[in-house]
Length: 520
Image (cartoon, rainbow, N blue to C red; front, top):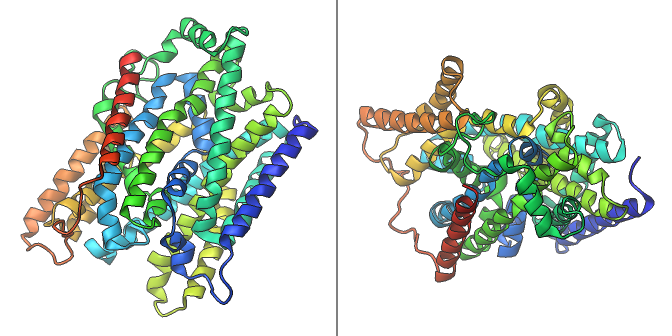
């Protein structure tokens, strides 16, 4: 055990405050029982600040903090492209995707696919997302979170995973999305404060007490190769971040899929009071996303100088935490636990939402609202139990789990983005074309992986995306069907945004461009 009594008190106060807030926001008025809209979409009551905070809290978890710090240690600042390009992707989602989804009044992404195409597409994608959320996302958060808890407290890995799972269930199982979203406000404040403080302390140490800027100068001077945003072909990690393809290729596909069509992310925006509130929340999240590399990447780069002999890159963040003084370590550890619990709760709620609304409800369409909520709670418990027993076998042998997650999801995201974009913006797209894109994505990715192994996965994502677009267009044209009645009608959807949103979009783009200009 390396946490002092003061550290434990800080962590305990955080957990107690979290549970009290979750209970407070989850309480229903006397005589009112939670229905599906309450449990899955917070009664469409989320304000912009809760949406923005919850988007980031759901996104930044163990695989981000531990995984991206590890990639910062191994690769450098180039891994921040995932964060900074995501900020611009969020703006695109807010302007062009949210108006369509909110107009359709959907609970889940598979539900939209049924409205637009047919039940085959809905069920196929629902089963895919359930598998990915449980066997990739939940396992990654549990495993990497347990690594951090083990490194700081000495608690065994399985017991650490079990503790994290139980803590997330204590506040999310009863309250649903509303409890998750409003407690995320605490999570984000703690995450940002703890992460920034860790970066501050590490830079102070590198600067030998001369200040943060002096520490940053020393870091850039002694590890200049870690500050290349665009990697050259001879870089040892070029396959992970292939040069200009980061700006022009598959990363756009990955980001649009994650921020636009990913249930456990977009569900917060679907729960907004209205479109304007959802778009304000998206903008808030975009600005927070710009800040994230200071929290999740910079400490990993600093660890190159402070802890140059780590056995695995993913040990960077936990090892840095152990260097912190008593009290500060408790604050940073609480921030890490906050990020882990938030993502676990978000993913569990979204697994429950998809299974209940897209699978179970089709089998029992006449059940009561309270019955569906019960099924959702049981599903959440089952999902976490399955993730607990599969986490170590799936992830135990990887040095950089973040890169593993990206490559695995890259097999499927090209087809998902292709079928959603065509489904929303090309009325003629047929259900068979959507299925062809979804199935073709996996097959083409596997073939490319097998017969073109030297192709960087990000380039593969971009090429498979273009192939899926072409495949879906060819299938649609070959069927020669009239425009389906389910086609999205864009004439009554307003894509124009308020001046404040447009100004924020320009600001986000300029800030991101300046970073690439500075560290080209």
